[in-house]
Image (cartoon, rainbow, N blue to C red; front, side, top):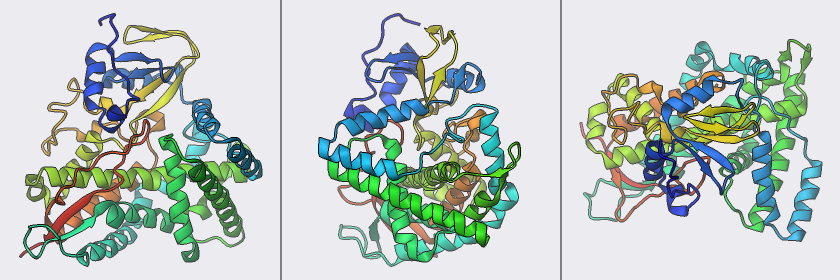
Length: 435
């Protein structure tokens, strides 16, 4: 490996929007690269990321301090009067202890095993009729969209795919699964979206900071009230299972803080990443029209397409690990206490692991080896539910419509974010399938 460090910053605006050229430079020249603007080592090669994921004794998931530090930096950018209001709101909120994402073994398993029953094969299959119902309802909305204003044939329709399908479908499904009352759905949609958006670590205006903090406070109150309600009167939903499960080694129910911590992770995993994957998958179909006919009506090919969409545009681009002891990775010495950032989005385009990494390959063998859902003990526990939604969603879209393409003049662009990768809008045109 060359000692010269490439002149690459993952925090440049253009790189945040489209990081893949920078990822390739780092993979080829410095696969373990110190980023001074971040104070961490960026790991971009597939084999090195897998090595770090497997070695949980050396590379710890207890990176909660990193997230707290990033939020503190954003907090310090607010004017003093706004900071005071944020402090007052924060003092009223229930502190969230680490549960799954930022814990190592054995504490991690203590919580993960508690909620694993929600994601068994039988539970996923049981939810399929509900997922289909939500997908069909939103497809009817697409069918009722306005006609295209462009030069396309009269039967073409146009819409913003993100607001019409990619955002509402996973939100409705996670709300149903959690058991959010109908009267609270509008608030829940806004608050859950804001909660997931917090992981983007993007700058906010003072007004946005206050609004997001108020939403977080109100969402806590709603979820705590539902946990207590389900303990008094159980229902058939995730909150009931979470509220009434007991930590076996301590023979107790979860505290409100523990329940909220787990639920917050469900909100990100349950809708933010799936919404992003729907958006990027649709963009791939629009930019590669032949794919639409290639996968339509073929469940196996749709499954591979979903994996390829996740590989090409990982909704979670990376997560940190804390180095627990002096070591080296890829020939680079790492001192105990160092922070590394595992870039799943870079590993998924690594030509050492994936042939033609920048192309969708429906014939790709072992497409599921992509790292969009992580790997090892911290593999996303909700991955089966996300895959179910994506497979059923794309199958239904292609069964009902054809000729998906970008709307005239549309040039969709990712929201600049270091952690999450999503499309804010995706203007498309399409038309009903012709028999």
